[in-house]
Amino acid sequence: METRRLLRTFAIGIGTAGLLISGCSGGGSSPNASATGTAAPEGLSAYYTQKLSWRDCGVEGFECTTMKAPRDYGKPDDGDIDLAVSRKKATGPGKRIGSLLVNPGGPGGSAISYLQGYAALGYPAPVRARYDMVAIDPRGVARSEPVECLTGEEMDAYTQVDQTPDDEAEVQKLSAAFEKFAQGCEKRSGEILPYVSTVDTARDMDVLRALLGDEKLNYVGASYGTFLGATYADLFPQRAGRLVLDGAMDPSLPAVDMNRDQTAGFEGAFQSFAADCVKQPDCPLGTTSTADAATAMKQLFKDLDAKPIPSGDDDRKLGESLATTGVIAAMYDEAAWPQLREALAGAQRSDGSGLLSLADSYYERGPDGKYANLMYANAAVNCLDLPPAFDTPDAVEKAVPDFEKASPVFGRGFAWASLNCASWPTEPTGTPHRTEAKGAAPIVVVGTTRDPATPYKWSQALAGQLSSGTLLTYDGDGHTAYGRGSDCIDTAINTYLLEGTPPTDGKKCPDAPDQP
Image (tube, rainbow, N blue to C red; front, side, top):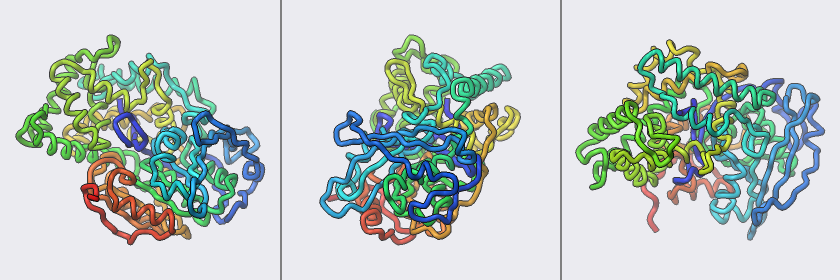
């Protein structure tokens, strides 16, 4: 089952991908945006001057620590929250520039796992040579007091609920699933739910910046991480250093528009997949036209809705919901297209194991049946950052035609998935808003023309809103662009990170990876 505005840019077992959200205020007054350097906002001196105790964290080359932040920035005397941090020091040669904070997206993606599993090892060597590579798991995520909602068995049931209801009974069952999910979050994590907004996390990032001894924050954020980075720049424009926002989102959009745009983005990604598939001799969706491929895809979903098939897991047959999630997972990276063709062919033979594996990677479900807290944190942040897209099933029904117009393949399911915050126990603290970050240094916004999760027009919009935004375009498929094979993109970003010189606004890079 999809949750509203889920993006992905962290490793999901099929390549590098990310996630999504939006927000405005996270409870309490805003920090002093005019403060510079390591000056602490009023009432927060104890947090900005705490001493970090670094230790070996069991992963070669990395150090770990825990920092404290106020649970409620509006009432800093009401208790702390412990946040996990990791770093890998600059390797040299060359003069150290400072710290480079990374965030892989989400909300809900573990920045520390991304750092230790990819960024501090896979980012270009010249960048790693001159920056300490740093990550903080956002509040409510992974190692930082994670939000918990359901048991593994309950989550298995939740992911199988029909998200394209055909009658009132199925509508009620879906609504009840959303309510049970929200109640589980309140029961297990109610104390932290009001304090996991994007603004709260952006404030945490500024505390960490000060503790690392950096006058300005240097940052690479992907997918939802772009919203987090833009929020930071808006709150602390004078402290914004070299910021790369890759696979950007548009903070000015209300949830319903954001969800509908994302629906269209996945449709575009499917069309690209289908156009490639029909050229392949093993395409399970036919070899004639993309229109026929879309028809075959919809028919497969319809068949699985009527009769789920074996998946290799006796407790989980592959129905329409899990199958749709599996297909969506493969839309994030064209490198997963061959795997998707094989999985679809398997499903046509009544073998759902391939699509189930893709769905499990999307949900971060382990072979032991346990889930990471990705989906729980994702909902907690999303439902706090924006008012819900829909409040009632009737409102969804009215919107379904618009969603189906945006995507004949995925539209109905995406529309109903947008109901998931209607029962949320915590009132939203954010609203749609323009993000301008007036006074910030140049900020590089990267957009991919056929990005499924963060449509290209969002990158155009964010670059236009930011007073110092510059747009870098990758003409290609997949979610995000940095480190995905384009020398043109990588060179432009590396030059910015190492020399502080942003690419020319509007620079475009070709589709295919550059040839040696």
